[in-house]
Image (cartoon, rainbow, N blue to C red):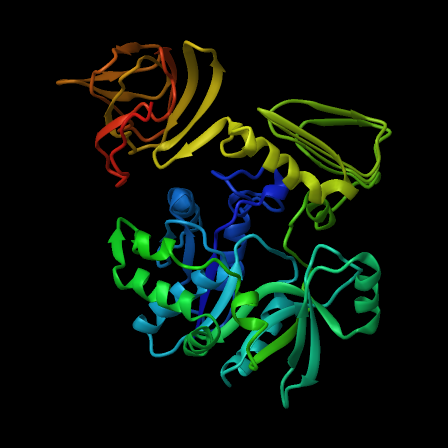
Length: 476
């Protein structure tokens, strides 16, 4: 049996302003109506002889991941939480250690959650070919057959064919080349793009880790020795995992092992690592434009245009990326798409919130959106899902006014509990314990007006929380 191990970490900074730390690209519906994570799980489910998936994600994204699995009707998946991102090698090590304790020696299919594969039939064929080789003890990577010189990917040079298989030994891995070198690689027919998808037995990977990256293995063994279940999640030991070296599967193992193999993959693959890559995997209109949202164009060609919250008008440009979100707009030439990460780095250095949060912020109970703000007031539109409730909490520096605009709210305010219906309101003074709950069957929507001397999200003390979030105290 094959166990899909879905790596759902990363922040996707090159797809800013749509992808952000709190809502990264793997959780966004960029190509289909599903998120990239959901499409990855659908693809994994189509593989024959497959077990329930193991999803590894950062603890900050746990509720979003769980909700997306629930939307798909996936109830048997395991979700393991990383307290801190340490790249792919430690994540795969955690999976191998955990699965080895659950099964005798499972085959692991390691899948990044943020890839696009449009030819599922070809993908299934490649997995079938890789299974034969991985069962022999090899560590298999999937090499994408290149369609053009590409400087944004690493490359794999194949060696001899592995007898009676559709795979090859690996001669070497090479870093992202310049254009001339990439062109030579493509013309030689000896190189593949490095997909970052792997298949191996858990025991094979752990043996290579012990040989080539023992510090990673040791840290992960300590981290998973204290794994505990928290709601639907598995938590590892934070201190032990935080001390683990950060490294990729390629660097830690694949470039050093003598047992590396590569299986060709011709399945319209992309890691959608930039806006231009996202443009390439979608159908364009007669002018060569890929358009999402309320967009009007005049004399625009070969461009990616996306409007998230309002009308976008674009005139007289070619080969551009224009992405509008409620709080940020990106305009760049396609040739400069890889440089978006420099903008994100600059914003982070200035501690701008636009790198971390959207105006719409998701919580396990629903979401809120900032409508207006100033130094002494903040207006939010809050949506609470049916059956959900916020923590019992208190604020030191702000009072709140709630106005219900849709649905019914159950409000706890100190010792009293009462109902509010549409067009009714209440007031929560500073220092008063309170809770909001939606006991109904449809979304509860309300407008919240905060007023006070400090309006940061860290002005909260939690007394009780059904989602297992830790108590938080004010940080100012």
